[in-house]
Each structure stands twice: as C-alpha cells, then as structure tokens.
Length: 291
Image (spheres, rainbow, N blue to C red):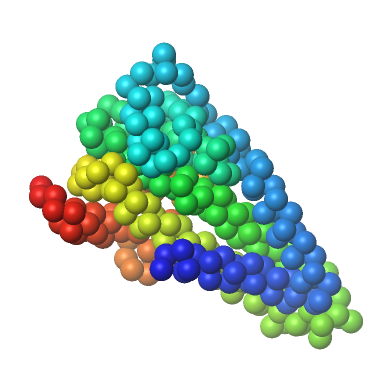
C-alpha cells in the first residue's frame, strides 16, 4: 500500500512541476519543466549520495577502525539479503542515523558518534535495520528525487515573484501562461502543494522502513526503544549542526525539530514518533514478542 501511495505521490509531484511551468510559461514552460525534471532525476540518481555524505561530514570507516559497528551492519545486511554498504560515522553529539545511495550496490549507512553512545547494541541494531530497509526499497533515491523536484518548484515560484515585482511578465503570453491566476498558482499554491507531497512521500517511506527494519533485526521493540531515546535527544539535547531542511528527511528522526499539531505534521518529514512506536509495538505483539 505504501509503495502504491508513493508512486501516486511521485506522479503528482512531477505533474505539479509541469503544471507550474505551464502556468508560468505556457506550453513551452511546461515542456521546459518536464526536461528539467528529467535532468534533476538523472543528477539525483548519480550524485545525491556523494552530496549527502559531504554535507554531513560523514567519514567512511573500515572493519579495523570500528569493528563492532562494522560487524553489526554486516550481520544485518546479510539478514536483509543486501550487499555490504559503506559504513560511515558523523562527528555529532546528537544521536541520529541515515542511509544514502542510488541502489543497494552503491549505498552507505551513517551513524553519529552520539547515537553509538546513547543506544545499546540491540537498539542500534534496530536503527541500522531501519536504514538498511531504506536501502532495500531504494527510499534514499526516491526521497532525493522528490526533494529535487520540490526544490525546482520553489525556484520557479521565486522567479515568478521577481517577475511580478519587476513587471517582467509578457502580456502577449498572459493567456497562454495563465495570466494572474497562473502567477498566483505558481507563487503560492504550487510550492505549498509540492512541500506537502514531498513530506507525505517521506512519511510513507518511514512507516515502511520501520516495519521492515523490525523484521530484519528480529525484534521491533529494539527499534521502538531507540526511537524513543532519539526523539528525546532531538527535542531536549544538542541539535545536529550538520542537518538542514534539504537533508533532514534522510535521518531516522527529524534532527531539526519536534512534532507539532496535525496541521504542522503535514509539513513534517517524519510521522509522529509516538505513532511509529505504537505500530512497532503492535508488530512485536503480532510476532509473539513481549516487552
């Protein structure tokens, strides 16, 4: 169900980009935005993992440098029937983790120094199983593409705003481009809708990764306890300095802020941690595992 939902949301996001181009620049604008969308997808496919690792200052470690962490990832990757990913460490006191890579053969998992200190090995195993699930389902690529398309839509909205301020809209093309309605759609509606769709994609993949992660590690309660601890640190302890709005969706728990109201959650990269824990506890019960 989550996979089908993601496909629909990705199609909606791409369609919104094309519609945004059409509203701003008519048929030519729609065609240009479709080409740009394909270009962003190509760029995200090849380079998103490198950019993310550099943005977080992630350092790849060998089996000799981090034997326990490396062995844990290796064991879980074997259980998930995945190739061994790169293992990276981010120097940050904030407990968190993420995965990146265009496919299982070119993937990396990264953990902060803070998470290795805050969690037990069982809890860390639950977190890493979650991240390996993202790799297994190619969520890292999907999220990068969605973020790229949403970013292009925001860029178009900014261009439209400046065009409106300086009167750069061409009156001859007003009818083709949608005129004032097209400008309002491009400036206000499109970027807002793109953000909502992008966040919905991210939340959908998190639920799936939690479920599969619980299966990979063998005990969903390990991940549930880890999420509870990470959420506490995210709200009350040192923030993750390397995190940004462009990459926060990759982390297992949003490193930038806590969850707010249901309206606020529409614009959140992650589902409610309380709901994620509830579902993991339900999964554990169905597996015959008691706390």
